[in-house]
Length: 260
Image: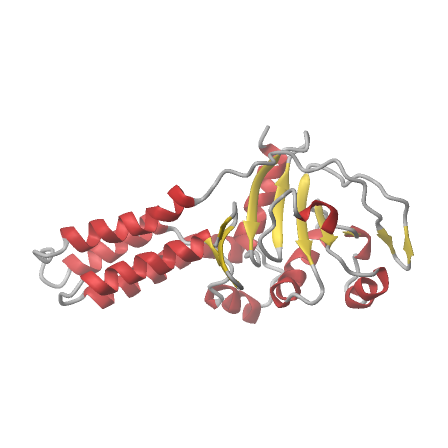
């Protein structure tokens, strides 16, 4: 078992901390909340938490097709959960039919909240707080530049062409690039021709650097894609494991630009 900044790794299984919060909370609630309306309240809490966190990002990216917006909401691998509003909505769903809470509510609610908070206690602080000052070769159409430093501030997405979640989030990243946002694609461990072939259908290949394997160990990257928000001084101000939603990408871009 490996406890990393982005995930808990057990053998081949990689569980991000936000996913672990969801799993532990659901397990605690389903095991202990044995009263009428408990399942409905859990569903209301989950839907509210998801919509509250995700809808602003979906509506903020009007270039995204409607089908992609719906899939983004349904894809639990990406997107955040607003647990405060979700918990409040779940409690209202429990109270509303009888205008009172079940007498057995306090204990399962307390255990569920504590189970959800446990990943915050387990999650270690990253040892490396600054993005390593490594020079990377850059793809320039069909040529490769000499190694250069990554631009900053910006969002650095560590990815590979063989990674399905990386491929799934690529249209979102490319729309951000086309809008002029500082997004860098740092490929890990693949030759230039393979990366070029994958990016051929996208109009912004000059945002791609190679050689990301030089920093994945120092940054303790648990899986792909992993995205870093790097400020103007090169400090890592936020990081995210897994495919991004529109809201998460917008938040990372704001943090890279605004946080000292």
